[in-house]
Image 1 (cartoon, rainbow, N blue to C red):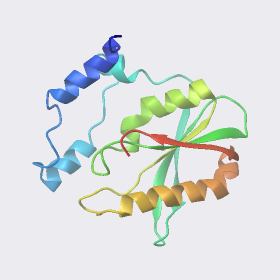
Image 2: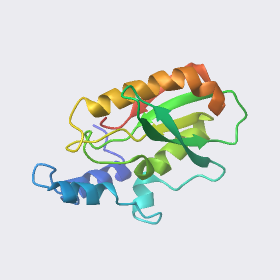
Image 3: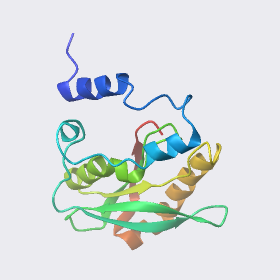
Image 4: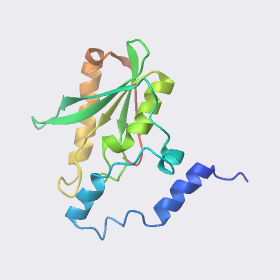
Length: 166
């Protein structure tokens, strides 16, 4: 039987230590405070999440949604020339926690290593926006990218969807 890599063990230990309390016991204000946390770009966090790769440019734009509003998306552009494959990334947090900026190291790493345009969606979160609001935002963002990827330098014919718990 193989052992889990040490970085994975470290992340699991941090999660098991109740670094973030259960959302079942948190108030809306506590949930919002946790969402706003930025991960420091130093050890031991970088041991698990990695460092931001050089050469990846991060920008923001807005995606239209079905209700007529718009949601912000973060775009990670590698140094590779386009049209680039497109990765739509949905941050974790069970549709309650998390944010695109908390996934900067991972999304930038995907962009750099794959040579893809990575688009991370800032979908609506519960409890302020009950289900299926966040899921609808994710669906709408994928549809928008299917139509608009070329305007961002991406190839809509080469699109993948990924993320953590979402």
